[in-house]
Amino acid sequence: MVRDHYELFALIYGLAVRRTIARNDPEVINRLADLARTVAATDDPAAVQRGAVAFHATVVEGAHSPRIPVVLRAMSAMVPGPFFELVPDAIPAERRGLSAIVRAAKKGDADKAAQEYSKMLRQQAEPVVEFFRERNLVTRSQSA
Image (cartoon, rainbow, N blue to C red; front, side, top):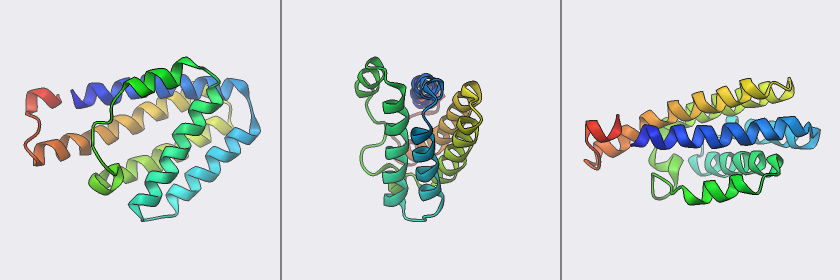
């Protein structure tokens, strides 16, 4: 269940980043680079949260697709509350992922950027699985 949720996010954000890169707007790519640097430069989970949310929102806005935000709003958050405070083990994957997405975007490689989104979100799913297991909120068969 958890892994499927993150796979679905990967599909949606992968589409969004492909559309964003296809639009070839240097201002958007520069904003993404700035946000990735902000996330990389802090150990404060709340600051990571703000930077990551802004990064993903910038990708979605850059796609200029009215359907993508609708689909994202339909998906509920798996972890109630401040994600990176509750699941700090997801921070390294976020940092690596954002940087890799930006590198691909700067090269105009939309497929690579989408792959990096998918990789990042798969890596983040694992600490979320553990978060739920530690709280006895999910069984092994539900998280697989």
